[in-house]
Length: 611
Ligand code: M6R
Image 1 (cartoon, protein in one colour):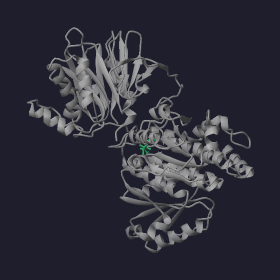
Image 2 (cartoon, helix red, strand yellow; image 1 turned 90 degrees about the vertical axis):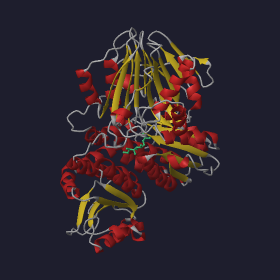
Image 3 (cartoon, protein in one colour; image 1 turned 90 degrees about the horizontal axis):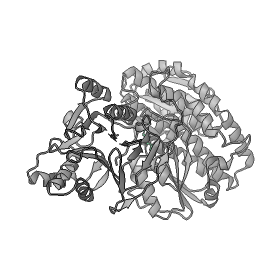
């Protein structure tokens, strides 16, 4: 998703801006640009490219640009194609340079108004409209800040903005309304960025702007105004370096590394949270016990992979704790008038903590009758973590690849602990908790064993090379695992894949099955195995190609039309975690064979900060 970096300093800033853009690359984008300003000349120097930051670097090496202030941007196209003309920074009338993240929902009427007044716009974007409006404000006699405030008051939607003005050289104005934006504090320099990661090479001191804040900064000054235009003080936070390496090591892709990081990520997740036999409540964070004591229903909300984690948790929580639990897609929840049961806990799940729909769902939950809000997230400084009343910090480590892998499995581990703590309060036998905790102690080893399937699955992936579709089936708690397997395959290999509850097959999707349709079944040896086997017979009878992931040779005939892949046997409560691993490997190898952009698949982004 769009990434913003800005700097105003006493030194040249183009290097800082490019470094920031490179650090934001993981978010996903399709064009990039930079504009700098020299205090002496006041005018802007701009370079934009359709493509990657490395293309921008090449363009800069051919035509270096100077300036002690500047804005840079990676654009994830929403309004208008990913072409150079639509890339940011936009410059209106040579006077206003602007970078924007988010969407301006009323841009059509604003654009018409500008065009009717004789303004010619260069791009098809909603963003340029904002730059033009600010310029119009200045033309009508407003100050730079006044013009920004008047413009912002007219905008509908969620956005973060960075602006510079040729008549106010060295000043950056930053606006946060619905999309994340941080201010970085240096010595005689100030920075802005979509997330702290972009600025880690220049500062560790940050101000997280509040909703509606407008910050005005030069190299030596910083003033913040709240939504009402009143000057405010915001605390700065020192963000400590987690000392984590974000390089690929010897792996070809971040995705491959992150899949193989999972045993370690699981060990970190469990550290201090389980004793030899039990779950340690304080290990999950302050106040958690008190909240779970009062919880009699739970709504879990997330997007994409995080939603599938919620779906797995629904099965666990209802089964073990016997309390009503709903799992819902955040973009649906936010526009639904959901019934809220007494004692309901609202739990949001998000790797990035910045998914716009999940944030909106949390804000809605705050207005509704929820007993408490909680977030499980992987980025401690994220909006969701900061805005939720309580947070459980995931310990997946930095996840760079757009496709979530270790964040899914570690989120599941955290959710299993939550399920067990809720269950404990509802008479779940201590011995059963003990059995699961015992199994958790060796979960990392089971995941390591599952990763040994790598070679086998690499070979298998070749059978998916020429096919265009795949069906993923599961039942019970493994149905969301099938959904996640299908999502992984489609997002990185661009191959169409659908997840289905195996029992639903005969109600429609069976019509798709023929010899060209690989059907992947998640079929652990549990109480539903016989049912799944019956469903798979329906596939075989129609000549479908079956790939069955199971544990122990669970009575699947080793016949030509069935490929059986044996996954390490674990306690049934943990099998959704272990069965996820081979599906991630399958997606990775199919995508590698297809030659797609593994870590930054086309059209999608790591941090989805727009609705
Ligand atoms: O950061 P979040 O967990 O809120 O992100 C939610 C989804 O955007 C994310 O899981 C997405 O579906 C991934 N690309 C899946 O691999």
